[in-house]
Image (cartoon, rainbow, N blue to C red; front, side, top):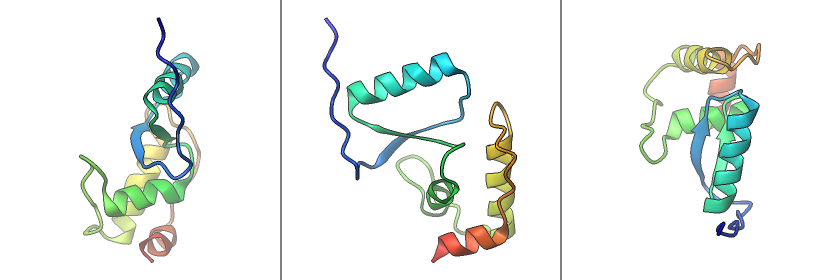
Length: 101
């Protein structure tokens, strides 16, 4: 018997961040997150959400706000364009500066 999907509140905190492009695994992650009632964010999604997570930390992810805007921009650019993430985006230090506000 399959458990019913739990509704995910629009303002639900993000619990899982994914670095996956494979469509099968992506579908399974989304299906599982719906069943658990958790919100999933993907690195290829909104860059502001990623920068906010990097700056403030969450759950086991520590805050990286002690790094410079240049260092954070480099780390965000790396994760958005490494592994199977191929966004082609280059995060600028000005993006990090805006996210700090």
